[in-house]
Length: 455
Length: 175
Image 1 (cartoon, each protein chain N blue to C red):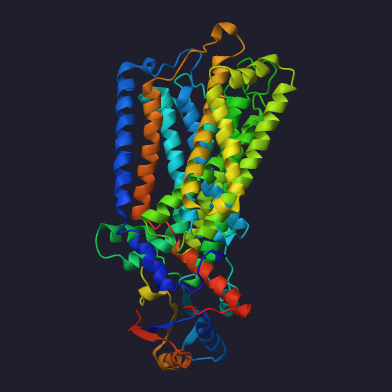
Image 2: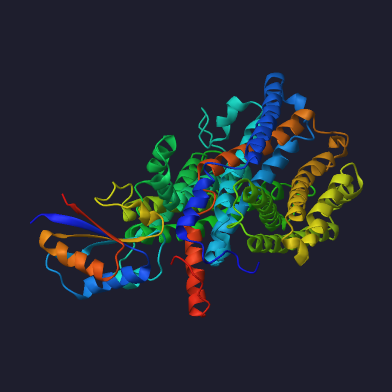
């Protein structure tokens, strides 16, 4: 239980085990795919209904102009930060325990961003008008407002999505070459041959690869911070009560890392079982992820308290009213639910016995993400319900089934993309696990604890 | 004289490293160390010590990409804002620097990432055609040394590989 991974795993076995995941997953895989498709069906049905009937069916109105769509958009953007944390930040910190699990975290980043992007379209209602959001001049040569955080948002998310896809792909090239060399002829072999770009693992290729991976990782860290800071600016740069808060950008970034880490635990447990990765996604690695999540949850709790304190002592009565309204008004059950799931439930992770208890961790990780989704909803909705002017107040608004259906379906969409990716591409990085095994066995040899290994 | 390729496979880095060290120490007529390629399933930390320093230029692409991305963004945005010069701005600048910095920053990163990857492809020689000799074992668990030399040097090269316990030696006529 003390070692992250066995040091005597033969390299050929690593290839074999991971390649097997591309062929024969457990039956649960197909159950997940079926459920995901059913969820997408619900969302597509709701979207068609909304598209044909009009945005009124979502019960959004003049007060509640953003609703669940933008709350969920922020949730999915936040979820995407896990890949950057595991791939880039921990890579720079030489935390090699991340190696067996960073690939799927990177995939999570990419698919979360894709899911978030869908909500911009759904929120627009008139999907065919999407091109209005692109920065190009109108027929009167008036350009979009480059001083608006909404435009920054579009640019930041495009940059983050394209950089994440590149980072995921570049990091996968050596593994794609392994797939190319080992998969039997067919469409997969053609795909891997094309994507591997003729990689042969030469010293020249490895040298360039190392520098490139490190450089893109260095770029991704400030990028991830800027993306969620800019999303926070959508709120903080407005004058609305409850949003105009200095600590919003770091609060959003901490929330993003938090929900991402919680999602990593959920998917870690699912992938470990579905693809039989027990030997690579080990309990000590799960324990480290749980501890990391606990640490971030405490940062998030601290920033939450900072936010409440700055509102309470800030002498802005309207903001204070919104805070009181959150805690005692119509949204109180959800606000307290957010506090419970986000700050109380993670205390479970402080206990050693639960840090490797898979059923407990599975439930806790899902509750954490429920809390983080509620957090986004509690940022968006109460301010609209209880703004500056009493004649704009709308305390009775409740999102329609159309909004709920589309939010529900987005989880199916994410699950489908993610599970298909894990079936088509290696979700454990073979070459990095080999490096991990190699370095650890070398370290053991130096310490006189040599174990019998291939290398 | 026609040239041939030889690929030797080894079980570990120590033996492959020793073979390369011997090739470096023993001059073989018709063979140059520049014609040696090491292939491995992982990036070995000691490879540079064995092969000697070979500079990588990817970071220059990064620098150029970042600067170009940032400049392109700043001037595109400022250029479009400058088209408002005839409008009343209420004393505010035509080209406001703080908000423009945000988009410049994003494009700085975007340009850096895109051009870094372009640099990677150029520096790593990708996309590439398959080498004259290739073994899938190299992507699994063996270390390969691919050399190119005159026909007269082949016997000496093979002898060096055999001395260092090469698992397998493949030979093929070069172009």
